[in-house]
Image 1 (cartoon, protein in one colour):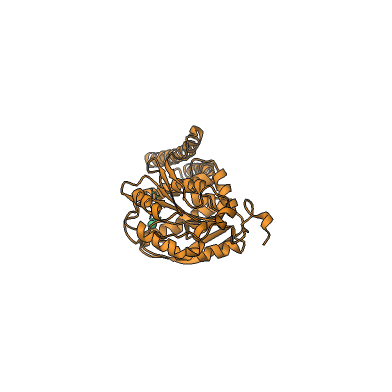
Image 2 (cartoon, rainbow, N blue to C red; image 1 turned 60 degrees about the vertical axis):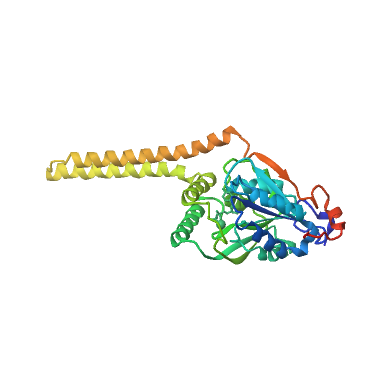
Length: 345
Ligand code: UDP
Ligand code: MG
Protein backbone atom coordinates (compact mmCIF):
# COMPACT_ATOMS: atom_id res chain seq x y z
CA UNK A 1 0.00 0.00 0.00
CA UNK A 2 1.24 3.45 -0.88
CA UNK A 3 2.11 5.19 2.33
CA UNK A 4 2.73 8.54 0.74
CA UNK A 5 -0.96 9.12 0.28
CA UNK A 6 -2.08 8.37 3.79
CA UNK A 7 -4.04 10.81 5.86
CA UNK A 8 -6.40 13.34 4.38
CA UNK A 9 -7.90 12.58 1.03
CA UNK A 10 -7.38 8.86 0.99
CA UNK A 11 -9.09 6.04 2.80
CA UNK A 12 -6.04 3.87 2.24
CA UNK A 13 -3.99 4.14 5.36
CA UNK A 14 -1.51 1.49 6.26
CA UNK A 15 -3.27 -0.98 8.56
CA UNK A 16 -0.49 -0.72 11.16
CA UNK A 17 -0.87 3.01 11.47
CA UNK A 18 -4.53 3.67 10.91
CA UNK A 19 -6.45 4.88 13.91
CA UNK A 20 -10.15 4.53 14.28
CA UNK A 21 -12.67 6.50 16.24
CA UNK A 22 -16.00 5.21 17.39
CA UNK A 23 -18.47 8.03 18.04
CA UNK A 24 -21.30 7.18 20.41
CA UNK A 25 -24.01 9.79 21.00
CA UNK A 26 -25.73 9.06 24.28
CA UNK A 27 -28.67 10.51 26.11
CA UNK A 28 -29.65 8.82 29.36
CA UNK A 29 -28.16 5.46 28.44
CA UNK A 30 -26.72 4.46 31.81
CA UNK A 31 -28.69 1.22 31.75
CA UNK A 32 -26.92 -0.13 28.69
CA UNK A 33 -23.56 1.63 28.71
CA UNK A 34 -21.45 -0.93 30.62
CA UNK A 35 -22.71 -3.76 28.44
CA UNK A 36 -22.29 -1.65 25.31
CA UNK A 37 -18.71 -0.78 26.12
CA UNK A 38 -17.84 -4.34 27.00
CA UNK A 39 -19.17 -5.61 23.68
CA UNK A 40 -17.55 -2.81 21.73
CA UNK A 41 -14.13 -3.43 23.26
CA UNK A 42 -14.47 -7.17 22.72
CA UNK A 43 -15.32 -6.63 19.06
CA UNK A 44 -12.40 -4.24 18.55
CA UNK A 45 -9.76 -5.94 20.68
CA UNK A 46 -7.56 -6.28 17.58
CA UNK A 47 -7.28 -2.49 17.34
CA UNK A 48 -5.73 -2.15 20.78
CA UNK A 49 -3.81 1.07 21.01
CA UNK A 50 -5.18 2.65 17.87
CA UNK A 51 -8.74 2.98 19.05
CA UNK A 52 -10.62 5.99 20.34
CA UNK A 53 -14.12 5.51 21.71
CA UNK A 54 -15.66 8.95 21.92
CA UNK A 55 -18.84 9.17 23.97
CA UNK A 56 -20.85 12.32 23.36
CA UNK A 57 -23.02 13.03 26.34
CA UNK A 58 -25.99 14.93 25.00
CA UNK A 59 -27.03 16.46 28.31
CA UNK A 60 -28.02 13.22 30.03
CA UNK A 61 -29.77 13.63 33.33
CA UNK A 62 -28.82 10.18 34.61
CA UNK A 63 -25.25 9.17 35.46
CA UNK A 64 -24.18 8.26 31.92
CA UNK A 65 -21.32 10.77 31.96
CA UNK A 66 -20.23 9.59 35.40
CA UNK A 67 -20.06 6.03 34.10
CA UNK A 68 -17.86 7.07 31.20
CA UNK A 69 -15.53 9.01 33.50
CA UNK A 70 -15.13 5.85 35.55
CA UNK A 71 -14.51 3.78 32.41
CA UNK A 72 -11.84 6.23 31.38
CA UNK A 73 -9.83 5.37 34.48
CA UNK A 74 -9.42 1.80 33.32
CA UNK A 75 -9.62 2.10 29.55
CA UNK A 76 -7.29 4.62 27.90
CA UNK A 77 -9.21 4.53 24.63
CA UNK A 78 -12.26 6.20 26.14
CA UNK A 79 -12.91 9.87 25.42
CA UNK A 80 -15.81 11.92 26.67
CA UNK A 81 -17.38 15.03 25.21
CA UNK A 82 -20.13 16.62 27.27
CA UNK A 83 -22.50 19.10 25.67
CA UNK A 84 -23.93 21.88 27.78
CA UNK A 85 -27.49 20.54 27.49
CA UNK A 86 -29.58 18.17 25.38
CA UNK A 87 -29.21 19.26 21.77
CA UNK A 88 -30.66 16.20 20.06
CA UNK A 89 -28.97 13.34 18.31
CA UNK A 90 -28.12 15.15 15.08
CA UNK A 91 -26.15 17.82 16.92
CA UNK A 92 -24.56 15.28 19.26
CA UNK A 93 -23.34 13.45 16.16
CA UNK A 94 -22.04 16.66 14.65
CA UNK A 95 -20.10 17.42 17.83
CA UNK A 96 -18.71 13.89 17.90
CA UNK A 97 -17.55 14.04 14.29
CA UNK A 98 -15.78 17.33 14.94
CA UNK A 99 -13.94 15.95 17.94
CA UNK A 100 -13.09 12.53 16.49
CA UNK A 101 -9.44 12.13 15.54
CA UNK A 102 -9.35 8.79 13.73
CA UNK A 103 -8.59 8.01 10.08
CA UNK A 104 -11.91 6.21 9.99
CA UNK A 105 -14.89 7.16 12.12
CA UNK A 106 -17.70 4.81 13.03
CA UNK A 107 -20.98 6.16 14.33
CA UNK A 108 -23.02 3.80 16.49
CA UNK A 109 -25.97 4.12 18.87
CA UNK A 110 -25.36 3.34 22.52
CA UNK A 111 -28.54 1.33 22.95
CA UNK A 112 -27.13 -1.82 21.29
CA UNK A 113 -29.64 -1.63 18.45
CA UNK A 114 -26.61 -1.56 16.20
CA UNK A 115 -24.41 -4.58 17.04
CA UNK A 116 -20.79 -3.50 17.70
CA UNK A 117 -19.71 -6.94 16.47
CA UNK A 118 -20.24 -5.74 12.90
CA UNK A 119 -17.58 -3.06 13.10
CA UNK A 120 -14.66 -5.31 12.03
CA UNK A 121 -16.53 -6.12 8.80
CA UNK A 122 -17.02 -2.40 8.21
CA UNK A 123 -13.34 -1.72 8.81
CA UNK A 124 -12.49 -4.42 6.30
CA UNK A 125 -14.51 -2.62 3.62
CA UNK A 126 -12.80 0.63 4.52
CA UNK A 127 -9.39 -0.93 4.14
CA UNK A 128 -10.48 -2.21 0.75
CA UNK A 129 -11.03 1.39 -0.26
CA UNK A 130 -14.58 2.37 0.67
CA UNK A 131 -15.01 5.91 1.99
CA UNK A 132 -18.37 5.21 3.48
CA UNK A 133 -19.72 1.91 4.70
CA UNK A 134 -23.49 2.08 5.09
CA UNK A 135 -25.36 -0.38 7.22
CA UNK A 136 -28.73 -1.23 5.83
CA UNK A 137 -31.22 -2.88 8.17
CA UNK A 138 -32.86 -6.01 7.01
CA UNK A 139 -35.33 -6.12 9.84
CA UNK A 140 -36.59 -3.47 12.20
CA UNK A 141 -37.28 -5.47 15.30
CA UNK A 142 -39.17 -3.73 18.07
CA UNK A 143 -40.58 -1.03 15.82
CA UNK A 144 -44.25 -0.72 15.17
CA UNK A 145 -45.86 -1.37 11.83
CA UNK A 146 -46.82 2.29 11.72
CA UNK A 147 -43.26 3.51 12.22
CA UNK A 148 -41.97 1.22 9.51
CA UNK A 149 -44.60 2.21 7.02
CA UNK A 150 -44.34 5.94 7.69
CA UNK A 151 -40.56 5.72 7.36
CA UNK A 152 -40.98 4.04 3.99
CA UNK A 153 -43.37 6.73 2.76
CA UNK A 154 -41.07 9.44 4.01
CA UNK A 155 -38.07 8.16 2.05
CA UNK A 156 -40.12 7.87 -1.10
CA UNK A 157 -41.33 11.44 -0.75
CA UNK A 158 -37.90 12.78 0.12
CA UNK A 159 -36.17 11.10 -2.78
CA UNK A 160 -38.83 12.25 -5.18
CA UNK A 161 -38.48 15.86 -4.02
CA UNK A 162 -34.78 16.11 -3.36
CA UNK A 163 -31.85 16.25 -5.73
CA UNK A 164 -29.85 13.71 -3.78
CA UNK A 165 -30.84 10.12 -3.11
CA UNK A 166 -31.07 9.20 0.51
CA UNK A 167 -30.94 5.42 0.83
CA UNK A 168 -33.88 3.81 2.59
CA UNK A 169 -33.45 1.74 5.75
CA UNK A 170 -29.99 3.13 6.35
CA UNK A 171 -29.55 4.80 9.70
CA UNK A 172 -26.69 6.70 11.25
CA UNK A 173 -24.77 3.48 11.97
CA UNK A 174 -21.95 3.74 9.44
CA UNK A 175 -18.25 4.09 8.86
CA UNK A 176 -16.72 7.17 7.28
CA UNK A 177 -13.20 7.86 6.07
CA UNK A 178 -11.31 10.93 7.19
CA UNK A 179 -12.10 12.85 4.02
CA UNK A 180 -15.82 12.23 4.43
CA UNK A 181 -15.66 13.42 8.03
CA UNK A 182 -13.70 16.51 6.97
CA UNK A 183 -16.31 17.22 4.34
CA UNK A 184 -19.09 16.92 6.90
CA UNK A 185 -17.23 19.15 9.33
CA UNK A 186 -16.89 21.79 6.65
CA UNK A 187 -20.66 22.00 6.25
CA UNK A 188 -21.69 24.91 8.29
CA UNK A 189 -25.45 24.79 8.16
CA UNK A 190 -27.52 25.00 11.31
CA UNK A 191 -30.28 22.64 10.25
CA UNK A 192 -28.47 19.38 10.37
CA UNK A 193 -30.37 16.58 8.79
CA UNK A 194 -27.48 14.13 9.03
CA UNK A 195 -28.82 11.47 6.70
CA UNK A 196 -29.12 14.11 4.00
CA UNK A 197 -25.65 15.52 4.68
CA UNK A 198 -24.15 12.02 4.59
CA UNK A 199 -25.75 11.40 1.22
CA UNK A 200 -24.70 14.78 -0.13
CA UNK A 201 -20.99 14.02 0.37
CA UNK A 202 -20.79 11.12 -2.06
CA UNK A 203 -17.44 9.24 -2.47
CA UNK A 204 -17.22 5.45 -2.96
CA UNK A 205 -19.77 3.66 -0.81
CA UNK A 206 -20.39 0.09 0.23
CA UNK A 207 -23.62 -1.11 1.81
CA UNK A 208 -23.74 -4.03 4.22
CA UNK A 209 -26.94 -5.65 5.48
CA UNK A 210 -27.66 -6.22 9.15
CA UNK A 211 -30.49 -7.00 11.51
CA UNK A 212 -31.39 -4.13 13.75
CA UNK A 213 -32.31 -5.34 17.22
CA UNK A 214 -34.76 -3.92 19.67
CA UNK A 215 -33.30 -1.66 22.35
CA UNK A 216 -31.34 -3.58 25.00
CA UNK A 217 -32.73 -1.40 27.78
CA UNK A 218 -34.10 2.05 28.38
CA UNK A 219 -36.49 3.91 26.14
CA UNK A 220 -36.24 5.43 22.70
CA UNK A 221 -36.14 9.17 23.13
CA UNK A 222 -36.78 9.96 19.50
CA UNK A 223 -40.53 10.11 19.75
CA UNK A 224 -42.94 10.59 16.89
CA UNK A 225 -43.11 14.34 17.29
CA UNK A 226 -39.37 14.55 17.00
CA UNK A 227 -39.24 12.19 14.04
CA UNK A 228 -41.95 14.22 12.37
CA UNK A 229 -40.03 17.46 12.72
CA UNK A 230 -36.90 15.67 11.53
CA UNK A 231 -38.83 14.61 8.45
CA UNK A 232 -39.95 18.18 7.78
CA UNK A 233 -36.40 19.34 8.20
CA UNK A 234 -35.19 16.65 5.84
CA UNK A 235 -37.48 17.86 3.13
CA UNK A 236 -37.14 21.60 3.55
CA UNK A 237 -33.37 21.62 3.95
CA UNK A 238 -32.76 19.52 0.88
CA UNK A 239 -35.35 20.64 -1.60
CA UNK A 240 -37.06 23.82 -2.72
CA UNK A 241 -39.64 21.93 -4.70
CA UNK A 242 -42.43 22.47 -2.13
CA UNK A 243 -42.13 26.18 -2.95
CA UNK A 244 -43.05 25.42 -6.53
CA UNK A 245 -46.16 23.69 -5.28
CA UNK A 246 -47.74 27.11 -4.63
CA UNK A 247 -47.39 28.17 -8.26
CA UNK A 248 -48.68 24.83 -9.48
CA UNK A 249 -51.71 25.03 -7.21
CA UNK A 250 -52.35 28.61 -8.31
CA UNK A 251 -52.31 27.56 -11.96
CA UNK A 252 -54.64 24.65 -11.28
CA UNK A 253 -57.07 26.85 -9.35
CA UNK A 254 -57.09 29.44 -12.14
CA UNK A 255 -57.76 26.75 -14.73
CA UNK A 256 -60.65 25.41 -12.65
CA UNK A 257 -62.10 28.90 -12.30
CA UNK A 258 -61.97 29.41 -16.04
CA UNK A 259 -63.67 26.08 -16.63
CA UNK A 260 -66.52 26.81 -14.22
CA UNK A 261 -67.01 30.23 -15.80
CA UNK A 262 -67.49 28.59 -19.17
CA UNK A 263 -69.86 25.97 -17.74
CA UNK A 264 -72.06 28.57 -16.00
CA UNK A 265 -72.10 30.88 -19.00
CA UNK A 266 -73.16 27.99 -21.17
CA UNK A 267 -75.87 26.86 -18.75
CA UNK A 268 -77.30 30.37 -18.40
CA UNK A 269 -77.20 31.31 -22.07
CA UNK A 270 -78.34 28.01 -23.57
CA UNK A 271 -80.68 26.56 -20.92
CA UNK A 272 -81.54 29.75 -19.09
CA UNK A 273 -80.71 28.07 -15.74
CA UNK A 274 -80.69 30.45 -12.81
CA UNK A 275 -77.17 30.28 -11.27
CA UNK A 276 -76.93 28.76 -7.82
CA UNK A 277 -75.17 31.47 -5.86
CA UNK A 278 -74.32 30.49 -2.32
CA UNK A 279 -72.79 26.99 -2.63
CA UNK A 280 -70.47 27.87 -5.51
CA UNK A 281 -69.32 31.01 -3.75
CA UNK A 282 -68.62 29.43 -0.42
CA UNK A 283 -66.82 26.46 -1.98
CA UNK A 284 -64.53 28.60 -4.09
CA UNK A 285 -63.77 31.02 -1.28
CA UNK A 286 -62.85 28.19 1.08
CA UNK A 287 -60.84 26.43 -1.59
CA UNK A 288 -58.80 29.49 -2.52
CA UNK A 289 -58.41 30.55 1.09
CA UNK A 290 -57.03 27.11 1.90
CA UNK A 291 -54.57 27.19 -0.95
CA UNK A 292 -53.36 30.63 0.03
CA UNK A 293 -52.80 29.73 3.65
CA UNK A 294 -50.99 26.56 2.62
CA UNK A 295 -48.69 28.52 0.35
CA UNK A 296 -47.98 31.12 3.00
CA UNK A 297 -47.23 28.33 5.44
CA UNK A 298 -44.74 26.81 3.02
CA UNK A 299 -43.06 30.16 2.49
CA UNK A 300 -42.92 30.51 6.26
CA UNK A 301 -41.13 27.16 6.61
CA UNK A 302 -38.36 28.32 4.34
CA UNK A 303 -38.27 31.78 5.85
CA UNK A 304 -37.82 30.13 9.24
CA UNK A 305 -34.87 28.15 7.90
CA UNK A 306 -33.27 31.33 6.62
CA UNK A 307 -33.89 33.00 9.96
CA UNK A 308 -32.18 30.17 11.84
CA UNK A 309 -29.21 30.19 9.47
CA UNK A 310 -28.91 33.96 9.61
CA UNK A 311 -28.48 34.01 13.39
CA UNK A 312 -25.27 32.00 13.06
CA UNK A 313 -25.35 30.69 16.58
CA UNK A 314 -22.86 27.98 17.42
CA UNK A 315 -24.34 24.55 16.79
CA UNK A 316 -23.65 23.35 20.31
CA UNK A 317 -21.75 24.30 23.41
CA UNK A 318 -19.14 22.05 24.85
CA UNK A 319 -19.08 21.69 28.59
CA UNK A 320 -16.22 19.30 29.02
CA UNK A 321 -13.85 17.35 26.80
CA UNK A 322 -11.74 14.52 28.09
CA UNK A 323 -9.63 13.06 25.28
CA UNK A 324 -8.57 9.45 25.10
CA UNK A 325 -5.47 9.20 27.22
CA UNK A 326 -3.64 6.72 25.06
CA UNK A 327 -3.45 8.25 21.64
CA UNK A 328 -4.69 11.79 22.06
CA UNK A 329 -2.36 14.35 20.57
CA UNK A 330 0.09 11.75 19.37
CA UNK A 331 0.70 11.23 15.73
CA UNK A 332 -0.23 7.91 14.22
CA UNK A 333 3.27 6.46 14.01
CA UNK A 334 3.98 7.27 17.62
CA UNK A 335 0.89 5.56 18.91
CA UNK A 336 1.51 2.60 16.63
CA UNK A 337 5.01 2.31 18.08
CA UNK A 338 3.65 1.97 21.59
CA UNK A 339 3.54 -1.51 22.99
CA UNK A 340 0.04 -2.87 22.98
CA UNK A 341 -1.54 -1.19 25.91
CA UNK A 342 -3.59 -3.16 28.32
CA UNK A 343 -7.17 -2.17 28.11
CA UNK A 344 -8.30 -3.75 31.30
CA UNK A 345 -7.08 -2.82 34.71
N1 UDP B 1 -29.60 10.31 21.53
C1 UDP B 1 -28.91 11.51 21.78
N2 UDP B 1 -29.61 12.64 22.03
C2 UDP B 1 -30.98 12.68 22.05
C3 UDP B 1 -31.67 11.47 21.77
C4 UDP B 1 -30.95 10.33 21.52
O1 UDP B 1 -27.68 11.53 21.76
O2 UDP B 1 -31.55 13.74 22.28
C5 UDP B 1 -28.83 9.08 21.28
C6 UDP B 1 -29.27 7.89 22.11
O3 UDP B 1 -28.62 7.84 23.33
C7 UDP B 1 -28.90 6.73 21.23
C8 UDP B 1 -29.10 7.27 19.83
O4 UDP B 1 -29.05 8.70 19.95
O5 UDP B 1 -27.54 6.35 21.38
C9 UDP B 1 -30.41 6.83 19.22
O6 UDP B 1 -31.49 7.24 20.04
P1 UDP B 1 -32.83 6.41 20.21
O7 UDP B 1 -32.51 4.99 20.49
O8 UDP B 1 -33.64 7.15 21.20
O9 UDP B 1 -33.48 6.57 18.78
P2 UDP B 1 -33.84 5.49 17.66
O10 UDP B 1 -33.12 4.21 17.97
O11 UDP B 1 -35.31 5.37 17.71
O12 UDP B 1 -33.35 6.13 16.40
MG1 MG C 1 -32.45 3.33 19.51
